[in-house]
Structure formats: C-alpha cells, structure tokens
Image (cartoon, rainbow, N blue to C red; front, side, top):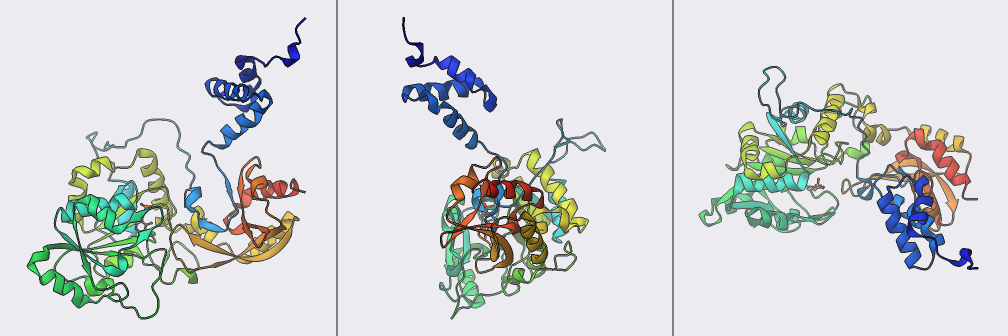
Length: 420
Ligand SMILES: *Cc1c(COP(=O)(O)O)cnc(C)c1O
C-alpha cells in the first residue's frame, strides 16, 4: 500500500483548494505548480496571498505624505456606472464632438484661461507644447531651472525628445530678464519661446535671483510656465478659510496667467487632487496649435480620466473643497486629528509633521497627529486586510492620521491592536 500522505497533491487539486482567494483558476494553477516545484506545496496559500497583494488595490495611507508618489499621488475615487459615454458626441446636435470640450473647458474657466486641453500627465504636456510651438527652434530656459523632478522627469531630456533646441540662459543661481533679452536678440539662437519651470522639489537659497513671470511676459515670444503642481488659484476660493499658510510660495495657474504667461502646464494628480493627467491652459490660439499637433492624439487621456476631472472641476466651481479628498485631508484641523487619535485608544498619541509630497513644496511641513508604536511594524501593517502604509522614525512606527480617511479609523485601530 502506498502512503498517499507523502505524495505531492496534483497541481489541479492544490489550485482548487485555493479557490477562496478569489484569484482566477489559471493564476492558481501557476501558483500551485510553483509551490510543488519548490518542493513545498504547503506554501501555495502564502504564494496566493502574495499574488493577491501584488494586485492594484485600495490602501490606507498612514505615512503623513499627502501626495505619496508610490500611492498614486492624490487620493482619488470615482464611481462610474457601466455604460457608453458621450465622449466625442455633442448631445445637442448629434454631431461628432471633442473629448477636449468638457473637463478642459471647466478647468480653463477655473484658472481664467481662454482655453485648455488635457493630456496624459504634465511631462506629456511639456513635450506637446515644445513640439507644437517650438518645433526645431530654440527654447530659452534659465540654467537654474534645468532640473530633474522626481520619477526621472529631466527638463533637458524632455526638451531633446521634443526636437526643440535648448538655449541655456543665465547661471544656476542667478538669471535676469536681460539674460533672456540678449539670447532672444541673437539671430543665431532663433528663440521660439521662453519656458519657466517651477523647481518643485528643490530650492536654491542664498545668493539667488530669478525673474518673475511678469518680467518675462513681454519678451516678444510666447512664455510657457510649467508650474507643476496644479494649484488652480492662489486665493483657494474652494476653501472656507482661504489658502493654508503652507501654500505660501506655490505658483498658481490663475495668477501665472494673469502675470502674463501665454500658457501654463500642470499635473492633475498633485495639488489639483485628481487622477493622473496633464493640463495645458492659456491662450486659445496656442492651445489650439497644441491640440492640432499629431502628438496630441498619442497623448490624449481616456474617458475615465476625463470624467473624473470633470467631476473634480465641478466641485471646484461649486467651491466645495470638502468634497475634494486632497483638500479635505490637507485642511483637517489638528484638533480633530487628535480627537480621532484618542478615540482609537491604541499606542501613544503624538504630534507629528505631515508633508505635501509628490515633488511639491519641498520645505513645507503641515502640523499633524499620529499614533506612535515602539519598533518597526511596517511589514505587519502592510499585511492588514486593507494594507496600511506607515512610516518609521527612530525605531518608532508612526501612523499619521492626516492622510487617513476617518472612515478607515476602525480598520487602522484593529490592525494596530492585532500587532500586540
Ligand atoms: C511633477 C512635475 C512634472 C511632471 O509631472 P507628471 O504629471 O508627473 O508628468 C513636470 N514639471 C513640474 C514642474 C513638476 O512639478
């Protein structure tokens, strides 16, 4: 008689035993095969769990970084009922319409622009502007702005890919209006536009000088400002208490256009608080040239993104910042964070500093409150039913409540209790 307990289970039997994971059978077969090949069929359940964890899913952000690059930057959620969309159809006339006529127009209105279009992200917005407006001509950029912004976005590289010629102006720490004037006056440089790039995640301090947008607005060529983060209006009319103090130095689309920029480019998923997207807004003729360039077709966003942006723009127009998750969490009073932390009844309640993150506002801290736990519990918290991302400082785990949706407080409390 053979001893059936020592015989490895069949791939199929093992795969079927994992059906409760909810993973499709073909994936379970792969997992079962790997576990058996490793001589450890018992590991199949853990392998299936790891496979589930590798899927895109909602997570709880307790890091205190509001725009966490690894967590998709701004918190977003959309409920879009199944069905067709009038993505490129004018319901009034029944004629073909443009996907660039809803969300982009609302965004244009919000930043006081004549026109706007939406592309995949801010990097593609810059690429499209350069290709459409500069072609193989020169683009004047201050040496102080030839920066790399997180995720490998290097201004000189993007420029090279677009075909435009980079004309470096001034020095790393000091650039003046007269430096641009001299380069533009030199016929050999053939400058088609001036580009300002917000330094986003770094600062040059000390002996520095950089012309304002207004000073560069009338150089005789279009001025394009890559403001990066997508703050629509420095006055923040969507917030009852106006702009938070930590926004102080951040350039805003409306004011940059008012100061004379021909176009602004910005991301959808930073301070705008939306899905990944890039916005080009400003002068109607220049936006039109971008929209008409063949690259615009390759960089266009899908209907899911456009509808999410449209809903976001409507919330801004209603001045309802509290319905925009990013602004809701960014402006939560510290005292309500403390009340929530105390109500959890776990760990010790501590004062913390949250940060905007996402390559914005590098030196800014936002007062916050968190739960401190001795030791590094990040791995255990990541394996909670809804994964929780925390941070560690001085061998203490901090769960920062500013970035946690109050609806997740119970899940956070349970996961922390389960640690001990
Ligand atoms: C973040 C940023 C970008 C890149 O934006 P993506 O949307 O990630 O492509 C470009 N320029 C500036 C100034 C930025 O801050």
